[in-house]
Length: 104
Image (cartoon, rainbow, N blue to C red; front, side, top):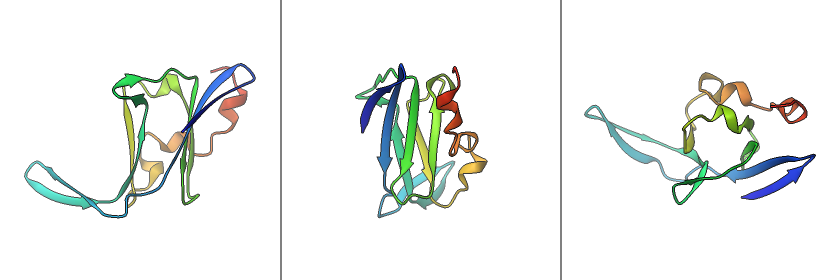
C-alpha cells in the first residue's frame, strides 16, 4: 500500500493478489467457498482519509479508480474471482482514470 499526493489530490494505492485457497462462508445455512481479492479502506478499523482509492488486481485484470466520496460507509471492498466486477458497485470505477483529472 502506498499513499501519494499528486496535483493536490491524495491518492491511496492498493495492489492485491487473489487468495490461493477458497474461503469458506455460510450464508443463510448454505455453504459456499470462493476465492477473492480484499481491499481495506481502513487501518485497524480507523478510516484512511484520502481523495481517491486506486485498487489494483495483481494479475493485471482490473484497476479501479474510486473517489473516496463514493465508498460511502464501507470499510472494505471484496472482488470475488467468479464474479464479474462490472456487476458490482466497483464496476463503474473500472479503469476510471479520467476521474483523477476531474474535480471530485
